[in-house]
Image (cartoon, rainbow, N blue to C red; front, side):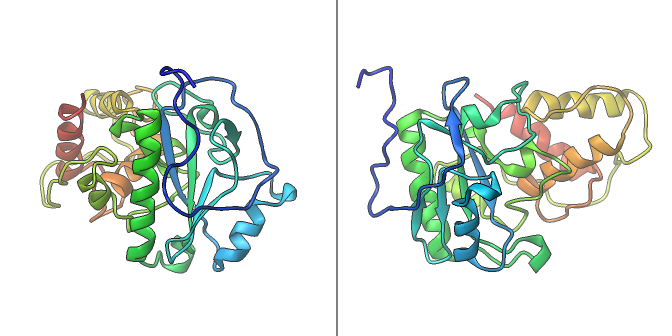
Length: 253
């Protein structure tokens, strides 16, 4: 393998194989994103079986159980079907550019229980390995909700984004504390809304700059809060949300 071709084989310890038939050729490249999901099902074994069944028409490259066990369903050089209709930084075929990781968790419909320590340890180990082999930028380690606002909520505001960043995985700043101050919300119009939309689009969210705080804008603000300001997820662009967004942009490479 030449120096310009990253390895697509994990270099960490024991990873069990459970091949899924749901994959195809990558249509674009290089692989420069990781997308994290939760399964959203009560039982991890059932979730894995579903992802490995042709009938489901969904898959991911990896699956992580609550106890930290890692399963590979799709080879990294193949296009797994995990992102669905999505976009980031002007790109719409996210499946062709990403590695998808499913994390066993019942999700919001089950009150979003905490992700166990062993599971987060495994997420960190796997992501570190993938990043090292594919040179994935920190700001392209994303939530499913980032690339599909309004349609997806995973892995959610209970996920340990700050801890991952402390281990060198993902882009993060300490969120501005929730407090008072001016805010933008549904129905607002004008230059401040257009400015908010421009900043969110600059970070990568798929959002048109219309100057109208419409449903799509609310969905994007909510997705941003789930990832970067999880203390309060309400879709209202308050001072805390705006300050956190400004600091994230300032911290980009």
